[in-house]
Length: 71
Image (cartoon, rainbow, N blue to C red; front, side, top):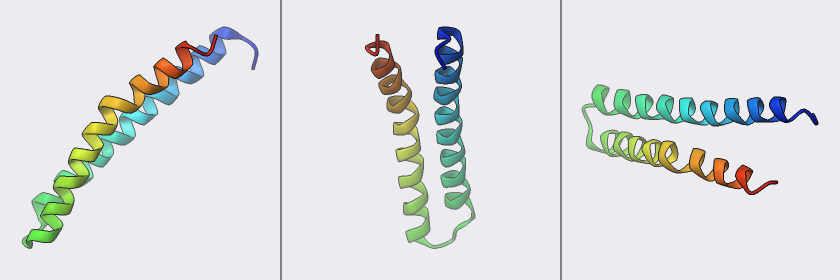
């Protein structure tokens, strides 16, 4: 894969896939929080939501920075 356009397209799709998986994790945490009557699963759901939001905010930027310096 030496074509720069194909490499950039692949990296773009990887970043979007990471964001989508983070959103799916946050939705899972919200569903877990909403459907549970007990406190421990609600706390777990809240932790999942927080970690998914942190992943959405940090991982794509880190990948972009890593690949930007990959020249």
